[in-house]
Each structure stands twice: as C-alpha cells, then as structure tokens.
Length: 216
Length: 160
Picture 1 (tube, one colour):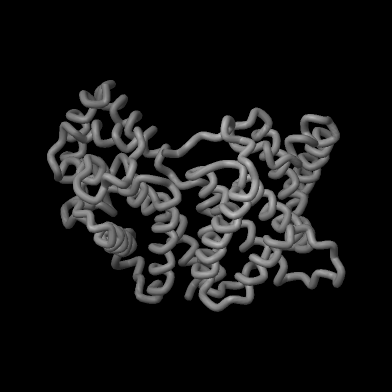
Picture 2: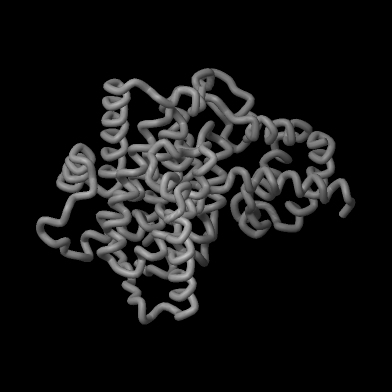
C-alpha cells in the first residue's frame, strides 16, 4: 500500500469517527432496548464490584468534592448559566461524572442523582437555542428514564423533599401515568419539555443571546 | 429472547447502523431518533434473526427501508445507496441543512462512480468488514477488496 493510499484511508477514518454515535446515546439506547425487551437488569451490589473499581470511584469522588469547595467549582456545578461553550462547562461535566460514580453505590442515591440531572438539563436547555437545546432535551429524556428505572427499585420515603421544580415534577408524573410504550412516553416527554421551555422563554427576557449560537 | 445474543448483536451493529443513517440525514438528533426506531424494529423481530444466516445484512435492510420511508414522508427522492446523491441535494432538501463534514464526504467521493462510492462508503466510512459487504452486495470478499483498493487510489486525490 502506498503512502498516499494510507493517507486517504486515514482521512476517511477520521471522517468516520466524526460520524460515530455519542457514547451516552449508545448507552441510553441500549438501556431502553433492554427495558423494552423486559430483560432483567442485573443488580450489582457494591460487594460484587471489584475493590479496585470501588476505591477508584471513591477517590474520584473525594478529589472532585475537594474541587467543589473551591469557588469556581461550586459556581460551575450549580449554575444553569454554565452551559456548553462556557469556560467552566468542562469542570461542571467532570463534577457530574464524579457524582454519577458515587451515586451508583445505591439505588436511592442514583434515583436522586438522575432527578437532579433531569432538572438541570432542562434549566440549561432554557438558556440556549435550537440544535443544542435539542441535545439537552434528549439528555433530559435519558435522565428521566434512568430516574424512573432507579425509582422502581426503591421506595422513596414519604415526605422526601422533592428536588424537581413543580412543573417538571408534573410533567414527569403525567408521562409516567400516561399510556404507551417506552418510546412513545419518551417522545411525549420531549415534546412537552420543549413546550415547557418555550413557555418559560416567552415569559422571561433572554439573558444569554450573546452566549448562545444560533443553529441556523 | 436471549439477552446475550441481543447484546452482542447490538454491540456489533450500533456504530455501523448509526453511521449508515448519520451520513444520510442532516443532523445528529434526527439520526439518533431514526437509529432508535431502527433498533426498536429489530428488537421486535429479533426472534426471526439468525446469526448463522445473516450477520449485518438483516438490520442493514431494516435501516435502509426505515430511512427510505423517512425520505418518502418528506417527498424527497434520493438514492440511499449513494451518499453523494443524498448530500448533493435535490427537491425536498432545501429545508434541510447538511454539515461541512457531509460536504467533505461528498467531495471525497466525487471522483468515483456509483458502485465505487457505495464500496468506499460501506468499507471506510460506515466500517463494514468485507465478509459483511459480500453478504450485502452478493459478491465475493476478494473481488470487493480489489475494487476497494482501486477506488481508494481515486479518492486520495480528491482528499488533498
């Protein structure tokens, strides 16, 4: 094979990588298919996990919470204004990944975590427009399904302080109690989330026009 | 339904089917929706899937038909087997926008005839093995390898 042929293949390979699916999409679609097929999800207790993996997660969590106490970390983590494109967004994602690792240690923590992420994605989606907002709505739909899945495994105590805003809570409840397959519910959730976001955007002045990019 | 068999099937096909769809639609959310629907259809019919008979051609056919229906609903006429035709645009696609990456793909394939484009797309862009392509195209893997090698020589000049 000539060098030129090799270069051509390399360029095509790079193009191919750019058209590959997001890892989060790959995982979430698999989870939906498993749920749709009615396969039982294997519950893995912390004792079954390798100690190396468990210790690593605790170490990541400990380091990340050390970061969290710093001002920049706390702001990045909590603020819905820190969205894709913001200088602190990578820090926010890193902290969320660390928290996700800790949340996996129990179904209760996992349910609470996904509940929080669902609210967070929708608040971020309010901030931005068009294409990127669609991605966040998609991620919110992923979080809703993970939240529902974890919630089914635990009985949350009465009077547990709700984390979701009332409108999002109502939306999640409506979708849960509605008819239809998992795909139909997911589609319905996304449509209603879009309407909710549009409603809020109509009521509030948009503070972030200079931060967001128009898709079109 | 065998969970392990389905998991293996999913792992082996998710990336290629995604790329098959992604090259032919303008944006990521649309591709993700369509791929989800394709795999839901595959799941519903998985009891009829026989790995010994068909490795990738089965779900490839599902994806092709699903995408054809999607284009038909938009009253667009495209040759799904020819990515360059999909991207180059004709009626029905004025409302859609393809990315610069799509245009780069079209440019890369511009030097090839339709059959060569299909070959390069399947092998180098979508990532199929020659054995799978032989099954899908009804040709021998050896013949496909030789044809792909000739096609790559033409592609290299258009990618400069």
